[in-house]
Amino acid sequence: ISVICVDDEKIIPDSLQNELQTLLPEGWEFEIAESGEEAISLIDEMVEEGTMPAVVVSDQIMPGMKGDELLINIHQKYPETMKILLTGQADADAVGNVVNKAQLYRYIAKPWEKRDFRMTVQAAIKMYRSNQIVAEQKDIIEKLRVNIVDNFITSKEIKLDDYQLYRKVFFQRFIRSLSSTNKNWFVRACLGLINMDGEINN
Image (cartoon, rainbow, N blue to C red; front, top):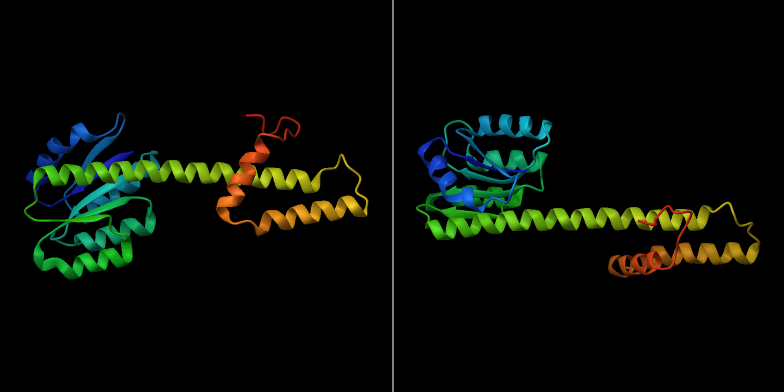
């Protein structure tokens, strides 16, 4: 997992690296790119190697690809990435563009205050980690829900008579009618009661 800073003035990413290095969780990387094109190539290479871009901090005014264009491009490929734009007061249109098209996490006006900048990046890192945990939990719950319903409805160990069939169909419709919150609660409750051939013991 990485934090990437993009700015054509190399002194700025070097300075930001010194400020941010102590904020990074263990095992995270800090990378620098000097243009939007270089950033895209860097991120694609890192993803191929298994390193995800958690946070991208980009300046707006750069030769070639501007910061808002870069962050929109990154969002299309990696929507979970937290995006921060460094911008002057005259770049309101760019901020609106990236807010609308790339779910901008924050913009930081130049010149920035070091403490505020550090807190913003730190908050972005925490948000990314929190979103990843939530996504993993949702995936686990959905897999368990599907496993419970499928095994309950398609069980080959029970021969169905009309009454049993009615109960199983009713159960299936009941599951589908639940809200997301209630469905998650119901699945958790079932996990405490149901053991199907060891498939969900863990």
